[in-house]
Length: 324
Image 1: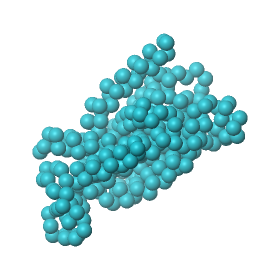
Image 2: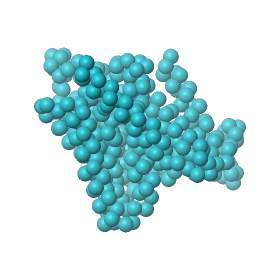
Image 3: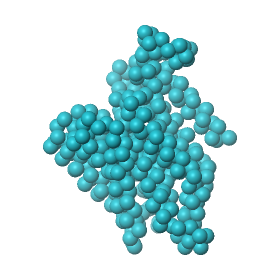
Image 4: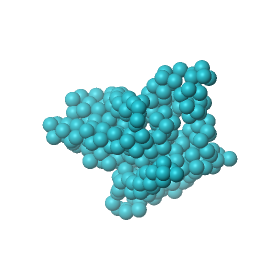
């Protein structure tokens, strides 16, 4: 029942996102604008050039980041792992800024650049996690240190290449105001590929949760499976960051919420994260752009307000569990 409820919540979130804003549009006007395609009507222009790209971007980014978070938590055996807490977002962001500075006319390679940055960071963190004696909290602290280094690299690029700073403020905090259908078109294939890969490897994630020795005894190639899962997470994060910027905490909050609701079975968790993450970011973006109208708050700021206290709560709970 829960997946059907999440699908309904997602549909409602999309409809509200299309209808509400600085100028409200009724659901009938939305349907009429989409069905008739009257390019001269105000409703059609609002839908095509503003609301539709933004809502689709929120859905795609939320789904990708939530599933990537679930994958990273399973692979690293760490409930505190997520694309932003271990620096994967910053790695993707650094490569996007570098590509924008050096190749400003090649917008179509931004998802690939973000993917390479996310993959590089994820592999470094994975190497740290694989080392002996690396605790959960130490791993998160290593991710924070990695984020600081990558953040310094982004600041360096913006100083050396001032043109790359255009729109960088929204990119760094995470926002969907500048999303266009063209940018979504390039990232859509990467996200679809990553989601399909995550769905196909759900049972492998369950087997890995049993421990490396048990997984090997069941005939699994642990190293290859782990690399494929990290590769899948990097594809999802890289594609999302390429158009949504440094949106954080989605990959931390959503998997924890649904792990509480449906348990640790990734066969159920991954689809719920895909649907729930999409609805969550769509609703957060709707609140961010309507709560302070006529002013607009980037959705990344709202997510940080929610995710920061949630992250602190998880750290405190993790330390308590270690003491117990």
